[in-house]
Image (cartoon, rainbow, N blue to C red; front, side):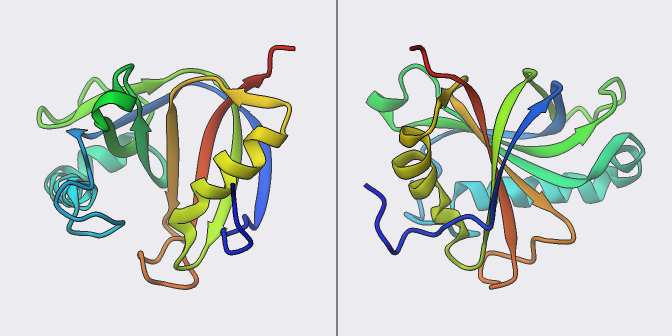
Length: 179
């Protein structure tokens, strides 16, 4: 159950989204294996470092096909997630096309679906899932449509993990509850 100390979103919006085509880097495993918290030194932080190193190398090519100045972190739960604790993490940017994608990078196409978009701000923004899954989703008319979550980092709103002014958007794919 969410507590009074759970972070609350600045806003919640329900949107319909077209397929999301991303170019980026992937990881599979327990991303908190080496560091048990949100930290630039855990496997997710290292994945972002690899992405930005490749972005630096191929920036002109990537920027030419980029749709906007937002980077995405996608957490995908495979069928055995609850037994293994391992999941996929994909980081990247939205692109118009993938035909000139760098060889070291991967394409991920997420389905067209309805999303609940939650905007969280401040040092506790990465605890937003507590509010979403323990408070909002169980009390809404929706359930998850797919076993993934997207974190969207807007260039002009995200300023780092420890910055009180940083904002991150959580995209949760939705469908109406059977009922």
